[in-house]
Image (cartoon, rainbow, N blue to C red):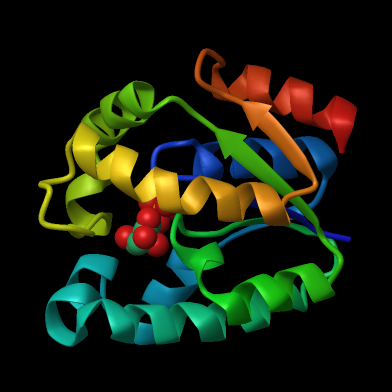
Length: 171
Ligand code: S3P
C-alpha cells in the first residue's frame, strides 16, 4: 500500500512527502515532477502552451502510472483529485489517502514564500493567486478532498517534521 498526499498548493505535500518516505523507508514520487519529466517542460510552460486542459490530461496519465506503485509515498498536485477519473484510479488502488488541511491565510503565506512558486505555479483563476483565489478554489476542492481521504491532518500550525511525526502514528 502506498501513502498518497493530497491538499491545496502550499499544504506541504512535497516537503512532507520526502520526509515521510525517508522515515518509512519508502520511495517518494511527486506527480508534478513526473509530468515535467515526461513532457520535458515546466508546469508553467505546459499551462502557457497548451492551457490547463493539456496539463490535466498529462496529470491523469501520471496519476494512472503512480497508482500502480505499491509501496511509495506519492504527492499529488492540488487539482489532481478534482478529476473523477483520478479519484477512481486512486481509490480503486486502495492506497491510504491523506489530506493535509491548511488554513487559507497560511497557504497564501507559504505559496508566496516558496521559491518554486514562480516556476511551478501558473495562475489557476483570474483572481491573481491571492486569498480570494485560495478561498474560492478550496470551497470547491475541500469537500472532494474530504470525500476521498482516509486520514485528515490539520497542518496549519505544524512544521513538516511535526506533520511526519503525527502521520507515522495514524497511517
Ligand atoms: C495545481 C497545483 C500544482 C500543479 C499545478 C496545478 C492546482 O501542484 O499540479 O500547478 O490545480 O492546484 P502543487 O499542489 O504541488 O503546487
